[in-house]
Amino acid sequence: MTQTLTADEQPARIGAPSGGKKRGFFGAVILYIRQVIAELRKVVKPTRGELFKMTGIVLAFVVIMILIITGLDLVFGSLTSLIFSSGTGEQ
View 1 (cartoon, helix red, strand yellow):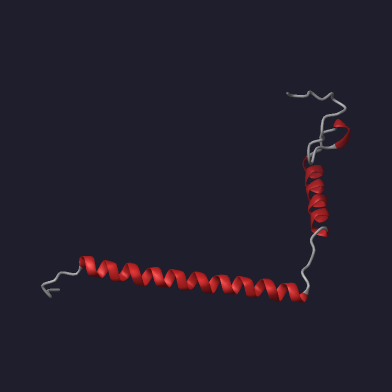
View 2 (cartoon, rainbow, N blue to C red; view 1 turned 180 degrees about the horizontal axis):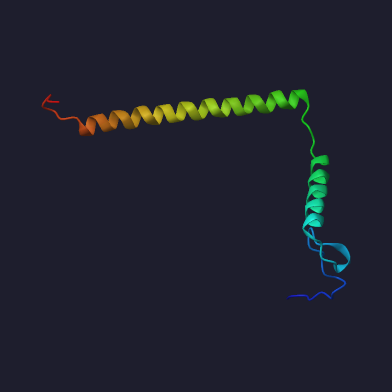
């Protein structure tokens, strides 16, 4: 079941100028800069403890991934040398 909205009830487009006027190039740039500044004000900086905790999590994840990839490389390298090495001892 769809519901149609009147012109007054239509949601405003993000970044659309109010009053139905079209903005020029510089007006659009200024609007963009204002929106960027407004979004940057919403950013919450982590506390020192949160920063160390997140850094530790990232480093642990990287170490785990290095170990997994190293293990897979060793396994596939061994399998490849077994498959492609000839049993006659010739090189």
